[in-house]
Length: 511
Image 1 (tube, rainbow, N blue to C red):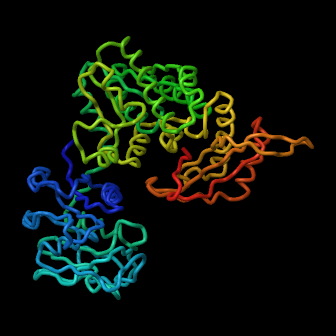
Image 2 (tube, rainbow, N blue to C red; image 1 turned 30 degrees about the horizontal axis):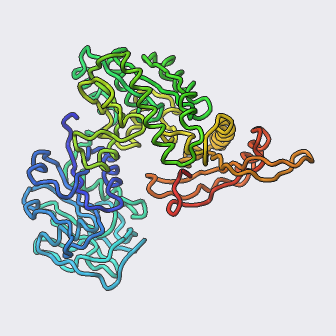
Image 3 (cartoon, rainbow, N blue to C red; image 1 turned 180 degrees about the vertical axis):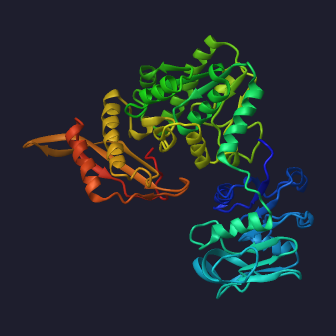
């Protein structure tokens, strides 16, 4: 990573913590999300221009409180505490935190005072609260900067030290002008210069990869998904045919998907891409298997066996590429350098390939940034904006055992759904949409004849991060068209269902 100005976001376990880091990046400043327990010495070594303390579920005065060394207040670095972070900064500086008599959740009217943090923001406004405790008094040197009906110290700060606390959540869209507040903190308090851009990331990453790899060999397992596609394209731009990409077609991909991967990467981009057709092999291993987790394990282990057989033929390589992205790193222990991403198509590969080092060119990027890199590299929208697709593919969209006939039915039904969603310009507002082979059969009537055929379920959800999701309100005429086309064009289907369950209690996938 080149030398950027950095904002550190200290994580105290709140639900919006990755969102805060993403917001800062969107505003042009590089961000690292670190655990609250990060030693002061490491913070000094990173030398951030500012620190943001996130929200979290704890109380600062409880026995299990997540606390910081008060030395952090003496670093001379601007800080913004959000929710729990605001309470903790107040507590460390000598203020008091109490349990509120009236808890605040949701949209709340708020009044702001003039200060750098609230510059150019309407002073009578609306914010998003979610708290039980609150700051009941502040230390000398600080002033109250905002209040609500039930929270007299909704924000406070010290203009000299650049330390501020807000009880509400500026990072969520429900806080009016919240993004402007974050921008004020970055540019008017931390004096950021906005040097984090996707184009500079691509330029510096390509130059860095060239220097690191030299004339050595690189191997990449490509799934065709967004992360592996963008990682492979970065490496190809850096070292050309020194990169060998291997695409294992396990026969569980969507209609035309394998052909599309080969066309985009082998034909159009002229990548050294080898396709291994292993559909029959995977199907035979999955025959008669009903249990979802068992399917996943079979597919994962078989993928590694296929790759191992290929790797024996290629011999020693210097570098193995993985499409690890920042949320993988954060969720697996905050940047542990020895971490290997656990994913069906790469998780076990390091143990079966003779290589020197793993390259993870996307490990500092969030998913939306990975997509921006894809566009910067000139990848087609059909690849960059591809919706999330599980590693085991259609195997976990067929309830019960898997056969070629079921896969063919599902592929055709899924293709019709995806085609109609795109034709009606709904593909950018729906996070994920697909068909499911339910393994249910029901009575129907077609052409005056009784049928006893398959029921296909449709699933479409809206989401920001897949942690929670709501079913998409697809217009009835579009649903009717999808249903009509499936029962008329897909042999063996006489009924179409639409899943209207949110997550939770359901998951997005059915298996």
